[in-house]
Length: 243
Ligand code: NAP
Image 1: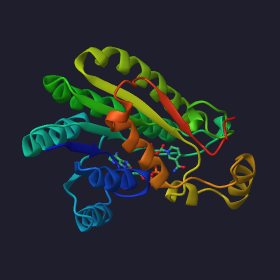
Image 2 (image 1 turned 180 degrees about the vertical axis):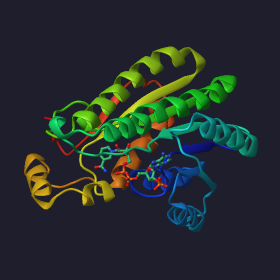
Image 3 (image 1 turned 30 degrees about the vertical axis):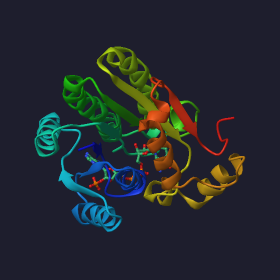
């Protein structure tokens, strides 16, 4: 049974990836940490489309919870083919007002969580010498947006991690790539002040934000055999923002 785990799949980009991968024939694990109802709703959509899977509550910043999730999924479905490391957060704060709690939370979720899941999933993929890991990065890992020093640092770290893991794991049959979206319509965007939204829209050559479904389509392409010789790449999709 082809199995994909999508972390942070109760809403936004993760939910769209889970639904898309189910359409591609994967049995999908909809991971979440707090939003049980939203995760169940995502799974209902998957099933309504003829797919299958389960929801799984695990805080990806907790290594023991990640170990248990990966072990349980492997037990339930016999293999893990795809991991989409997606659960992440953004909190804009200028350096001079930066709270230690923001720094800690962002680094724990956007970096440590990705490492915990990648390591535990790779330990299973390695046994079958096959697997794909997709890291959800951000265009902010490459470009400088005022107020995003912490977020940018975490996404820059994920880009570096992606390249190194691709090199380490290639011989084990595991591909590792990252998707770096620009502004995507999700609750993350809803939280931005109106004047920031205008400013960002004006900076995007395509003059629109992307959709979670567009990101999911790129993830589906990257995990497919169409990209079987591609590893260690950061795929930017940002309507031209970074040009
Ligand atoms: P979102 O709407 O805020 O959703 C975040 C998801 O992560 C939720 O499902 C949330 O579920 C889950 N989550 C949060 N903390 C978790 C934890 N400790 N353990 C497990 N799950 C956890 O975010 P999004 O906008 O879809 O962004 C998803 C990813 O794309 C992030 O990595 C983000 O940096 C990246 N990205 C987003 C944009 C954008 O414009 N939206 C652009 C570039 C990159 P619970 O509520 O259950 O915790």
